Image (cartoon, rainbow, N blue to C red; front, side):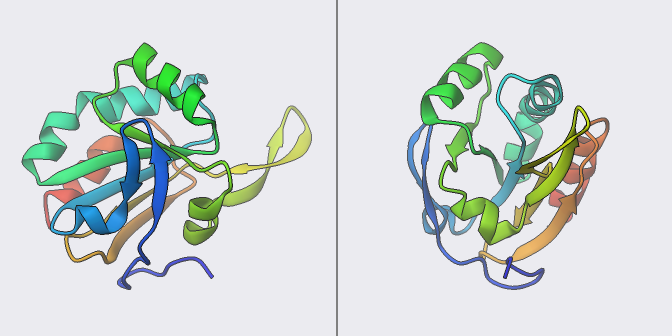
Length: 153
């Protein structure tokens, strides 16, 4: 069962471009967790760049941004360096986080059904509760919408 709105998110840890990432270590901060399908693809690069451009505004609002996909840590390190992201990327190759947040879907790719990540964003408040979710995200304008919500917390 994916985590539900207004409930505490179970603690988790994951390999990230900045070492081991643990949710419990972020207590007291708002966390923006965005799931994207694949490193180095057009939509994912644009979304990451948009979050990167707004990074300072999220920090001023007391929020930390973290990107998540099933790509390897090595792929994430290269993607982060190439895109100059000011935030960490989590490698979820075992799909534990994808399962926890219920983001794996069957999608159409070039006329074929494939299993992949549905672009989604989640805001976890300073107490560790899931406060907002966006599923099936369209990239244009999304980061501004997330920031506006974070600023209300």
